[in-house]
Amino acid sequence: MQTNLAPEFKGTPDGEAAEAILRKCVHCGFCTATCPTYQLLGDELDGPRGRIYLIKQVLEGAVPTRATQQHLDRCLTCRNCESTCPSGVQYGNLVDIGRKVVEAKVERPLGERLTRTALKQGLTSPLFGPAMKLGRLVRPLLPASLKNKVPSRAGARAHQWPTRAHPRKVLMLLGCVQPSMMPNINAATARVLDAAGIQTLVADDAGCCGAIRTHLADTEGGLADMRRNIDAWWPLVEGLTSAGKVEAIVMNASGCGVTVKEYGHALAHDAHYAAKAARVSALTKDLSEMLPALVEPLRKKLRSTPVTKRLAFHPPCTLQHGQQLRGGVESGLRELGFDVSAATNEGHLCCGSAGTYSVLQPELAYQLRDRKLAALAPLEAQTIVSANIGCIQHLQTGTATPVRHWIEVVDDALA
Image 1 (cartoon, rainbow, N blue to C red):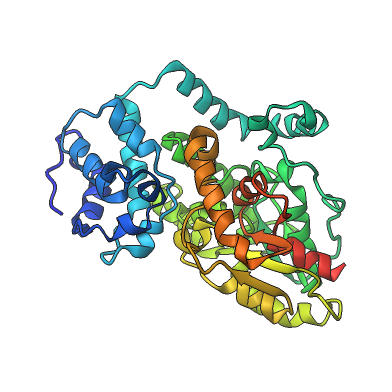
Image 2 (image 1 turned 90 degrees about the vertical axis):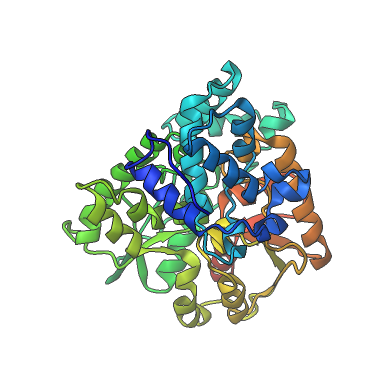
């Protein structure tokens, strides 16, 4: 697809990046068949091909409207379309550019501005933890919309971290909401890695990976988060402290994993951070990528009969589309002796969580949640497992079946 950039975008990093992406698009429409919002709404402008056309128009000088903004808002950024695209169009990067441009040209209603600011500032604030504790205390009194965002419990062993030192060390991002919403995921990760002879280190000054602000069109805020994390991690990446040098940066929230693996791309034009960002991205691994090497040492320590529950695995979009990692969790869990299956119907579709999407687009988000749970129902699982905190909490709001991170199930079997 050829485009003629408006003068304000020619020669700019965003303009050049968008032009390169648009050049790959042949407008074939294969992506519409796998786009969740197109499946629900049936509107071409609520599918990748239509949104690409809207972004192209804006970059060529057309004045965006409120309708343009809403069509881009309704995109989940699930990147299912990238898995489908025969031309390798990097739609996720393009829609981030489009949102940034439209956000600067179209003023939102006051209510939307306040909500988005609250999400950007509140979810990444030190006050989020105390607010979540208070929310648990008064959870029965909360309206359903808020209750759905507050997990009922933190987990009995949520703060039991291993204390042994090991020669092998990895660095783990605690995240911004995960330590408060579901702290047992991080603790379980550290305990399982410890059982395999790997020590988990964290950098206290690290925080949100940058995804929240970036996907809310606050590109500069997202880049600031990325730089802060790189600064916090760098001494451990280089082995400059007594803690030693880490062999990998491990992500147990697949949404964070997508973003951190793209630090090199996001900061490629930053002379001070480009090389460091590329190094961080190269070191970053989703937890599932470590699973094959963990199977043998863990198998020796598992209880003799780890299969106590039938598991259904929901692969987050950020894992199967964003990181292009498929099948690793299921095969690893099976090798460890677990009974796990994935839905054979619509396993590729998003559950509707998508970061802050379930807050900003609740009607579509809950339709997708119910559709996903319906696809998982035939498996008759006793526990649903996933790999991203957003998916876990979102799915849990629609089912009485426990929804957990797969690492927690492994951790339970080791206890």
